[in-house]
Amino acid sequence: MPDTTPVMSPEALCEFYLNLSDAIYVIDPVSSKILDANKAACEDLGMTRGELLNQSVLSLNVDVVGEAQWGEIAGVIRQAGSFLFVGRHKRKDGSDFPVEVRTDHICFEGKEFFVSVARDVTPRSLQHDELKSNDFIRAFALNEASDGLWDWDIANGTLFLSPQWYRMMGYGPHEITDPTLELWKSAIHPDDADRVMGLIDLHLKGKSSRFEAKYRLKNRNDHYIWVHDRGFVVQRDNQNNPARMIGLVLDITQSQVLAERLVKHSQEDDLTGLYNRRTGYELFEQHLKICQHEGAELQVAMLDLDHFKLINDNYGHSNGDKAIKHFAHCVRQMIRKSDMLFRWGGEEFLLLCPDMSQQSMCNFVARILENLTLHPFVTDDGIQLHISASAGVSSYPEHGSTITDLVRIADAAMYEAKVQGRNRLYLGTRAKHQT
Image (cartoon, rainbow, N blue to C red):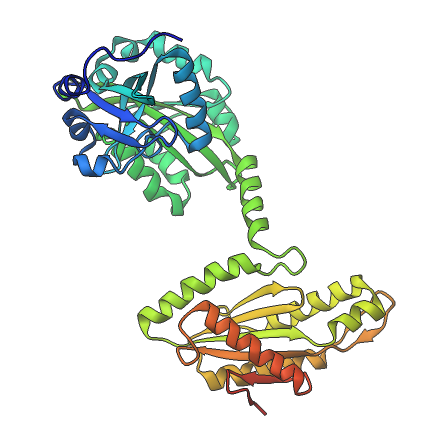
């Protein structure tokens, strides 16, 4: 490894850094925290020195994501002693700009530091002859031939779409003879349109170094596919107004559907399809904050199947699962759209009912318990099996203002209902029996 010990004193080194026109950052290699920065760095990012020193490489560099990636980059810098890369830095207002960054590894008084010199290359990006040449555009298309290429002549209002784009959208090569920007805009899902057009507008105004978005497009069969779209301005006029923009679209429907399934799987209980306990906590917290803000009531019920162990012991775990699914189905049929039912664990369920009085909640839960006893389920052996449940009710704000208190009180009331004979409900810490 080259000798990287600085020959200047710390005072001279600091003075040297402060007077440079390029942005200078002193970085902790381990944590990626910004330890110091000069005036040019603050001006580039639109931050005060105090604001900048609370940042890290992960929050400033758009293209460095996560501690694992930073660890790999830091390892390369340590090994090479000096490293040059091109990326994007994020300003305080959220916009980003292209930078060329050279980072050196230095040691001082037994400690290691990274010193990065970052140069804003926006003027070079806007004026570089390569970006204006047809050779570059052709190379760009050929290198990404699996994607759909679009070429928007902003000045003339014309739009070119590659054969790959037509195939992705289910069209023949000659079905659309005169593609326009309006045609493309009309195919964007209404829920995505404002966001996508806003991102394009930000790039056209120079607020971001490129346009990039994931959104839904309607294909020839009127089905929406998920796409990953990215592009950038390749030519500007003499007044620096955008004149031409090109981009690539990739069909990501399969990966997006898989991602949505994984998210859904992480939120739901596999057996009942209800939200699981973790998601229940998140939604509970959201609704509790709304009720606190609006001064509204929130009713909470803890419900637990009676004699569930006997069902498992006498009829097997398969029928125990059937009992749980049957209970979830019965309750689901009775609750409102605004109510939320979660599988809290085992044979326990939590029910949240906003905009309902305490007395109405008690009457409602009593009807749920009664309905459950009236509808048996059929076991694997064809036996009709009647089940029941016990419940405890707590209310916000009467019984508490936190999830912990409201669940604890409802849970205690539910256990009191079991002690008193099961198939009934009790209210709050007073354990008042509702008849």
